[in-house]
Length: 314
Image 1 (cartoon, rainbow, N blue to C red):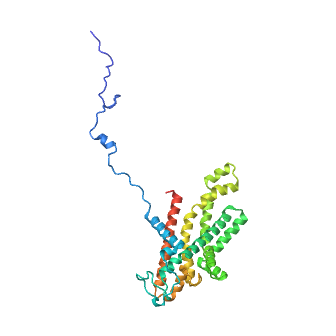
Image 2: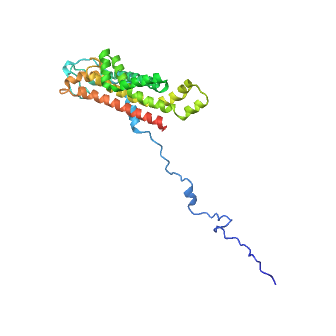
Image 3: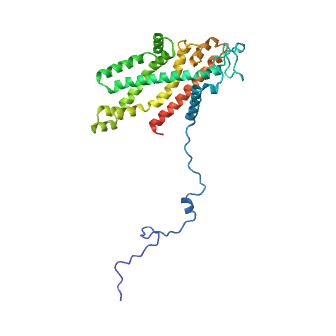
């Protein structure tokens, strides 16, 4: 007589059951492979398109640059050509922007004045940012005495409104393209100096500067290799935006009779000459004003895009 075992023999659970050591059967499920495998002709992930605003701004600035470098390609005529039989004519197919009080074609004068207007804007922006960087660097990276003097200089300049400070400089130097550049550059420098000073202070207390100090790098090397490159990088976008803003300020001064003297086709001089005919021939002021506004909008749009790309890397 056989004795039954005290512990029953363990039987293997069915394949795929819970607690089973045997993997479930690999019976293919209809349509599973088609679901996991990439299907032929499936739509691809769309590529990121560049924003339309910066593209339009770049194209607009390219047209202005062409007008500045080669105005004869866009307006073959002479900006000083007189036609006393066609004075103060409204915009038409023969004269796209109309004519002035001497019968000169306004479109030709606007195109040929682009070079001097852009030169004033670029010069004023360069003067403004150069002065801003010098004052900000003296304020944030030097000793107590020089830093205090730079801070007081920034505060004094910032206390004057931009237009008033520019008027004082032009009254001292006399109206000319050079004095216009210096007046607009110095007048707009205090605002940029505060921005640059904040960037320098932020970079001076950053982690990579502390690491360079711990490694024994000299002060001059830290400033030149770490602080300045990181703090001044956003100035590329700021410089682009300030070009259009400088042209607006220069045109405002010219509208007050303190800019480039007629018969120059500079945009501010066109505004100054056209204000006497504001009611009889408003296009003499409206059209150059819109051209200035388009340039300012293009530089601001492109400058903000550049600044965003530099800050975010996208």
